[in-house]
Structures are given as C-alpha cells and as structure tokens.
Amino acid sequence: MKKLSLSTIVIRFTLIVGAIFSLFPFYWMIVMASRTNSEIFAIPPYLTLGGHLIENTIIVLTETNFFQAFLNTVFYAVVSTILILFFDSLAGYTFAKMKFKGKKILFVFLLATMMIPGQINIIPQFIMMDWMGWVGSYNALIIPGMANAFGIFWIKQYCENAIPDSIIEAAKMDGCSTFGTYWRIGIPILKPALSFLAIYSFIGAWNNYTWPLIILNDESKYVISLALTRLQGLYFTDYPLVITGTLISTIPVLLIFFFFSRQLMAGITDGAVKE
Image (cartoon, rainbow, N blue to C red; front, side, top):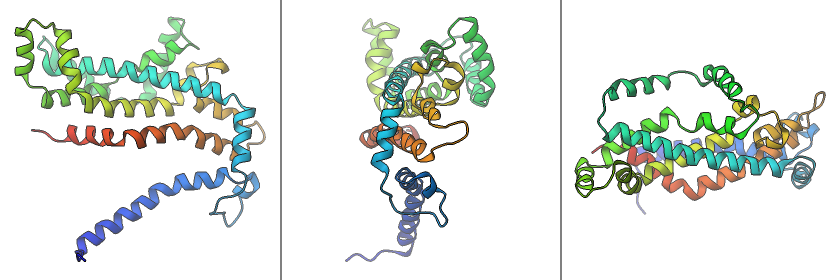
C-alpha cells in the first residue's frame, strides 16, 4: 500500500472539510423542506429528514402557478443564453481578430463597464424600457441582458490564444467573408469557451430575481424566482413551502451542472492556460 505524505493528507483533509461545508447548506435546505413550520424553528434544530417532503412538494405544485413559472423560466434562460452566446462571441472575435480604428479605447471602455455595479443600471434601463413601451414584456426581460462585458472579455481572451491569425488569412485567401470566417472557423474552435459561457449564462438567468421583479407586472409571465415569493403571505409565511419551491427550482440547474461539468471545467482550464 502506497504511503501518503503529510502534505497529501493535509490537502485531502482540507478538501473533504471544504466539500462538507459546501454541501451542508443544500442538505439543510432538504431537511427544512421536509419539516413543518414549527419544526423549522425548534431548538435544538432538527438535523435529520422529516416526513413532510412529499406533502410540501404536492402543495407547491398544485396550489401555485409553478409549472407556468417553470416554463417561463426555461424560455427566458434558453433565449437569453442563445443571444449572449451569439453577440458575445461575435464581439469577442471582433476585438481579438479584427483591426479597426479606436479598438483599444472601445475595449478599455468595455472593461470599465465591468466595474460599475449592476444596481446602478437598473433605473436607466427601466426608463429606457418604459420609453420603448416594453415594460411587462419578455423583450424588456431579455433584450437588456443579451450581451455582457464579461462574456465579450472571456471570448476575446480565448480567441487570442486559440485562433491563429494564419488560419484567418488562409480563409480570406480562399474567399471566405469576415462573418463566414467567424462562423465556420471561429465558432468550432471556441466550443470549450462557449460551453462555459452557456452554463454560466443559463445559471445566471435562471437565478435572476431583481430585474424580473422590477420589469414584470403580469403574474402569468413570472419566472420561478418571482413565483416563489407568492408563497409568502402578508401576516404568515409557510417557510417549508418556500424552501420546497426553492429546492424544486434548483433541480434543473443541478442537472445541467452534473451533465456539463466536464465542459465547464474544460472551458475554465483552457481559458486559464496561455501558450
């Protein structure tokens, strides 16, 4: 049997402790979803599963507009992710491989926007959406977020390392247009980076709460994050139902992470290695 060194033991112990601390909040959410309201506030707190998980799940699914909110969220997250992938990859490819006047100044301005807190943009965005008559529509929900500075920066950095200029020059000599070069040569090479950006964007859209809360005023268009707030009463909140709804809403995100975690890690490591 191979003898482990002290450093290896310390590293593995640290990783195990870190994993336990990371997973405990999710386990604790399941425990609270399986309890009643009085059991949640019991002292000392219950650390084991209760017997009300199925009952709470049925109440959430039958007494709320959960399925409509789920479909709304899928539509919002999928369309937002597709638009972000297209526009961010197009802009990132342009900054990395195209030559035009003012490129450096424009890119510095783009990076500067990453330093601005998102809350500052809410009021100007709302005024703009109101001026366009889009308040309460999916256009107002999706269009303002169809491109972001982080995605453009991520794709640009990946393009500079992964796409040689010689391939682009060869494509031009063969008569390929600029957009054709981006679409036929750039996109296939960018698949690892796009996979990471797709998962990152989908999870961000799925968990988005503030902007849907501000811009949507029709309950039939609510996403899950807003639909769960309907479980909170004015004078009384049934916390097990709220937590059960939250637990159900996290299942699609967890499935996406489990199925695409390899692509996610590949995208991160590929972007971190510079030739």
